Each structure stands twice: as C-alpha cells, then as structure tokens.
Image (cartoon, rainbow over all chains, first blue to last red; front, side, top):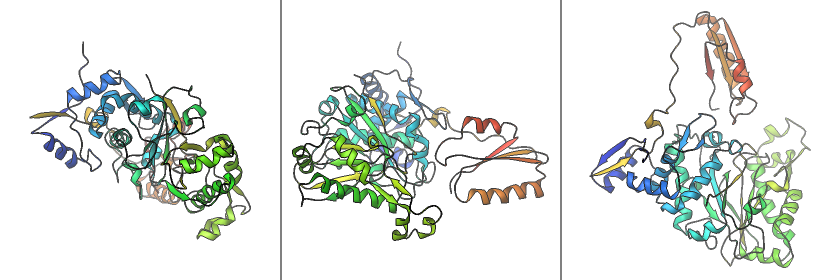
Length: 345
Length: 92
C-alpha cells in the first residue's frame, strides 16, 4: 500500500500562481520555485528510495524530525531532477550529525552557509561542474542541490532571516554553495577518500562556511610561495573575522595544481605546510583595530587556523587557466565541523 | 487547477509551542539559562532583581551554557528541573 503524504495542500490556478503563493508566504529564497505536486514529490521519493515518512535526521536542538517527504518537496522546489535525491539526502543526513551543529550554524549572527563538496561517480552521473567558474554558476545539479539546502532550512527548520536565522550579513553562498571536485584532472586523492570513504564511491562533505576569498599568484613556481599567498588570506580572516581554529578549505585550480604536481606535493604535504604556516599571535589584533581585546590574555599566545592538519580541506576545482585559488573560512572556529557522508547507491 | 504541497514541517503540527504562563510569580522558582553571550549576565542580574523585589519570586537557579552555539548539556537541563519556569537567553 502506498503511504499517504503528510503535507497539507493548497489549490492554485497554475504554476505562476503557485510561485506567487510561495513567494507571498516566504516559502522560497526569493527565486522562483517548481510547484511541488504530489506526483512530482513521489517521483523524487522513489528516486531516493525513501518512504515519505522516513526520518532522514533529527535536528538536535529543536528535535525536529526531518522526513523524506519534506526533503523531496524542497528538492522539487529548488529545480532538482529526481536522480539528484540520493546526493541531497546524503547532505541532509550529514547536516544532522551533531558535529555539524545545524541549529547553531543556522541561527548564528555569523552568517554562514552549508557548503557542499561532492566526490565520486555521482558528480559525472549528474553532470556536475568542477572546472571553469567552479564556485559560480555552471551546472544545474550544483545550483539546485545547493539551493535545496536553503529551502530546507527555510521551510523545515524555520530558518527565515530575522526569525531563526539571525545572520547579520550572510553571504551569496546562502542561495547555493555546492562544488564538485575535479577528480579527473589531478593526481591527488579526492577529499572524500582522504576522509575515509572508499575510492570509487560517491560522497558529500558539508561544512558551515563563510564566503570564498580568492587569491592570485601567477609569479612563482615554488609550492611554498604559492601556499604563502593562501596562508596570508587565512591569517587575514583570523585577524579580521575569527581567530579560532576550525575547518578552512583551500580550492586549488589547475594552474596551481600543476605546480604542486611538478614538485611532487600531495594534499597531505599541502596540509602539513599550511598547518605550520597558518597562525597568528594575539598581539596582531592590535594591527586591525582590535586592541580592546588583545590585552585580555597573553598577547604572545599563538593561534592556529587548524587544530590539526586534517582539518584543512583541500579541494581541486577551477578552470584550466589563471593563477587563482580560494580560501573558504569556517563559520566561527570549531563550533561546526565538516561531515562526510556516503551517497547511497 | 494545481494542487501543491505545503513545504513547512510546522504545517503538520511540529511547530514549537509556548508553555502555559504561570498563574503567579509569587513564591515561584525561576530557572535562567545564560547563553554565554557578552551582555547576558548583566541583563539577568537585572531581571533577577526585578523578579524578586517586584514579583515575589522565591528562588532562581542560574546556569551558564559552556558554549554559546551548542545546545544546553543534559546535566545542566537536569539541574533546572526544579524550576517552575525557565527563561532562556537568546541572542546578544
């Protein structure tokens, strides 16, 4: 017997009117939605191999039981295709793991967004993009999987700006923030494999992230000099935003990857160098207008960007040309830590 | 015509509900959860004074969360069990 859907329903004239209803009620992010009809939601649930009442996770603070039905509704609204559902479900499951701190990262004035990194065969199966404009628009799957999370936060968690979402500023990644790793064009281990997922399997990694900060250095072939540029951006974030250690991410595009490859540097080598390089002293707060708090403790105390080298997430993505890369800072220190989750196949 | 599904979890009765108000504060035990933000301690000092001097509150149980952004630990919640009502600080 087919399980009945739990959601209440609304009658509208057509798709235009459906979008107007959702806009009026604050059920969307301001962009148009695909109307979530029962037929579509059932197709998505089938693709995710879930009963509508299957509990995908429980939000740990308000104890909200997150059903597959509401996740499927968000995915339909966001413009996903049904086959994206296993990846979407994996991200939601990951966000419900305690160390992600779903409630805190949703409610904080700090203004972060869930950033997703996709690894494994699911990237190519869904047509995700990992090269040119990797952190921007480029593929439907990147855009809509990321957007599903925002619609989920709005409608399932109640994360409306000014209500549960108390972000002072937020950032554009709150619309969508999903990147695939370029596994085909680099000699490195994929992020998910480094984090324990067997090679050849699909997985998502999610962390509560600030906006990307691009760096540029096309005037060296020395891996250490390149990393010094990334490190400077991390140190600037530590001084101007939050000094606390957490998951920083590096997004490294092809031109820089070639330099690391020629020098024989693995991701582990990069992490080790960055671990030793990315720290600031408390007294440096005095150089950025924070003298009022610098003196509260020992000003010679050093603060690292990451508590351990493994906390640095190294991601291969980006176009083939240009000496660009990016650092992506954590929300605030280690209040939320990255979670990697296998995609059910 | 098109029938669309409501995207909200709260639409199916999972919304948070307000606890019923106390009939009187006189002689009541009031719990305070301090969310460990900068201004909370001063605000709560003031509220405790008002509740005791103006409203006859008998006792307060104050606890400060170890971390602003994480849930109240279970043992801390247990310590507040004797309160008739609890005030939880949210925000800055």
